[in-house]
Length: 468
Ligand code: GBH
Image 1 (tube, rainbow, N blue to C red):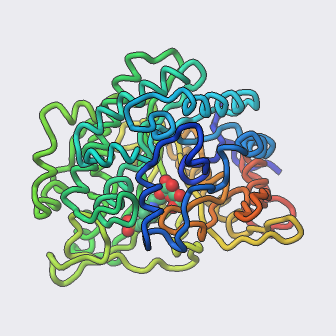
Image 2: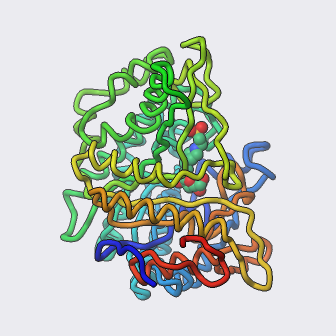
C-alpha cells in the first residue's frame, strides 16, 4: 500500500562527512586537520578514538556508493576534506582533488546526485596555526579553496553547500571546546561564528560568479527549537534567548536580516570582540543569495528560567545566562536525545515563513541506537520508527506549504562520532570497525523503499508496526 506522496524530483539520500568516514589520513598527500590534532591529544575523544581509519571510505567508496544506490536512494551528501585538496590550507594538491574526482564519477555512474559540502569541520591544521576561524583571513582562504574545488568538479556537481553547521564549528570548537580545536572562550567563539558565516558568503559570491546553469548554492544550519517548560513570561524569555543564539543568530544574517539585535545584546557581556569583528558590508556578504537552505534537525531543547536572571546556565552556549536546559523526556535515542518529530514540522514551517518561501532540504536527520548484527541482519526497529515518524513530519510541513525538496538521513554509515568516537551508531549501514564489514540495517531498506516509491508506505517485513 502506498501512502502520501512526495513532490516529483524529491532528493532521497544519506549524508556523511570526510573526517567521520574517510580514514586514509596520510594518503594522497593529505595534510593534517584540526581533528587529527584534537583526536591525538589525550582525553579529548572517548576511548582515544581517531579518524585515522574510520570507515576506510577513502578506499571503499565504490562499495559504499553501491550500497546506497542498491537501496534505492538517489543522492549522496558528502564533504570534501580541505586538507586533502590543500594540505597546507593554501596550495592545491592534484592527488587530493583526484579522490573527489573519482568519487563524483562513481556517483554519476550509479545515477546518484552528488551533494557536495565544502566544510564539515576539518580545517587544515596549518590555518589553525595561523589563527583559525577567529582570524578573519581564514574566510578568504575558504573562498579560494571553494573556487579550487569548483574548478575541478563544477562540470559534474550541481549541488554546492558551503559550510555545515557553523554553530558547531564555532561554539563547540572555540566555545565549550568539546570539538576541535578545543578552545574555551565564548567571545572567541562568537568571532569564529562571524568568520564562518563570512566564509559562506564570500564563497557563495565567488562560486555564483562562475556558476554554470543548474548549479545551486546553499549552506546547512543545525536547528534546535526551544520549548519553554512552562507558560510564564520568564519561560518565554528563556526560550527567546536559547532560540536566539542557537537558531536566529545563524539564520537571520543568511536571510539578509542581519544579526538579531536581542541576541547581540545577550552576548555583549562576553567581551565585545564579536561586535568589533563585524565590519561594514559583512552582513551584505553573508546575505549572498542561496538556492536552498540545508536544515539539520535532531532534537528540540526544553528550557526553564533560573531565579537569578544572570546566573550561569548549564548549557554551554554564549549568552545563555539565567536559564537551564532540562533533561529530555523519553523515549530517548542512545545519545540521550529527545525524539520529537512534530518539532520538525513546526521548524520547517517556521523557516518557510521567516524566509518567505526559501526552498529547504533536510540535510541531516537521524538517530543513534544500540545496533547488533544477528545472523547478518540488523533489526533496528527504533530507527525505522524514527525515520517513519520524521518523514511523516516532513510531509506534514510540505502539505502546510513549505517547499521541501529533499531528505538526507544521517548517516549512510556508522562512523566517527566526533567527541564520542565510535560509540554512537547513526548509520543506515552497520560497520564492524574491526573488519570493516558492512551490513545494511532494516532502516536502510526501509528508507530505500520509501525513496523508490517517493511515498510513505508500510515498513519492511519483520519490523513490527513502525510507520503504520
Ligand atoms: C550533526 O551535528 C553533525 O553535522 C554530524 O557530523 C554528526 O555526526 C551528527 O550531527 C550526529 O551528532 O548543548 O546545544 O550544544 C549535530 C548537532 C550539536 C546536536 C550539539 C546536539 C548538543 C546540544 N549537534 N547538540 S548543545
